Amino acid sequence: MELFDVIVIGGGPTGLACAIETQRAGFSHLVIEKGCVVNSLFNYPTQLVFFTTPELLEIGDLPFVCEREKPNRQEALKYYRRVVDTYKLRVNQYERVLKVSGADGNFLVETEMVMTGERREFRSKKIVIAIGYFDQPNFIGIPGEDLPKVSHYYKDAHPFYDRDVAIIGAANSAAIAALDLYRHGARVTIIHRQATLRPTIKYWILPDIENRIKNGEIKAHFQTIVTEIKSTTIRIRHLETGEESELSNDFVFALTGYHTDNDFLRSLNIEIDPETMKPKFNAETMESNVKGVYLAGVVIAGKETGKIFIENGRFHGGQIAKALLNSPKTHK
Image (cartoon, rainbow, N blue to C red; front, side, top):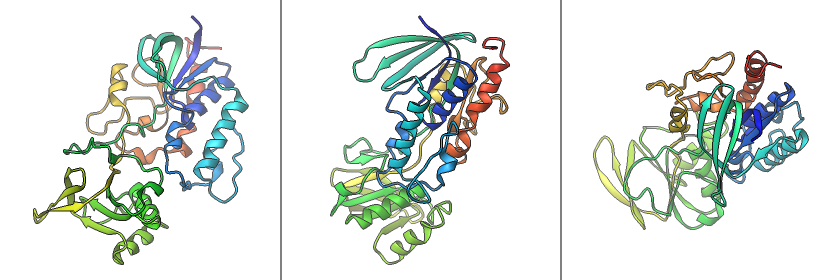
């Protein structure tokens, strides 16, 4: 069995950046991704435009050229495919990591092919975990949340034309979904437990959603929670008055945020702070408390997922590569 210098778990922009930087440093690598390359970006809304300019999404010094000032989802997907091709990165797509065992210098990674169920094993000297958080939604835990009409991801507005659509949450993704759905003919209702929209909504989006609510074009129930989701309705309760009511409903988007897979981190004996949910790691080398296991990207953020983006997570690969050059287990 081939012994890789580094196995990177997660094929998002940060994972690809880690593969590039370790490859540049002279290390052999393998990236294992349970979906497609940059799977989280693929699952973003179809018409999404990034909030940032293209140079801040670049990895490996490969220029990101786009048509307008800010790139859209399609341009980003094309760019990261070009990254993989340009650097000839070894990426195993649609392969899920089941277990990591062993120790620094000799790790065993057990996987399962998503399409066939085939089990495989790989060995490496070092492990980099760059799994992100978009695959782990924060469930509300109410009756009916498992109904087919409920989704924790928003992709496209067209299927919801002339339908009653409820959005649970009022952060940036909820505001974007609400506006897109409204402009494609859906009847949109926002339900949020706080008294106002989240102030962190992007400055050019906030006035738009506020005006749609003010004009009654998008309905909003603040200081309100959903208590039950039924096949054709949802039940809501006002938190101050306790008043309950039932609304006609065809679809629900529970956009209540996401979290990293802490159970997977714990399975590797990585310590996690119970309050912040941040894993223990060295901020200079990105090495976790487990020798030979490094963390990259939003996986280090704990509850503060809004503080790590592609823009800053892309630099973690360079820190890790530098640390590997100084490690006795992988010293070149």
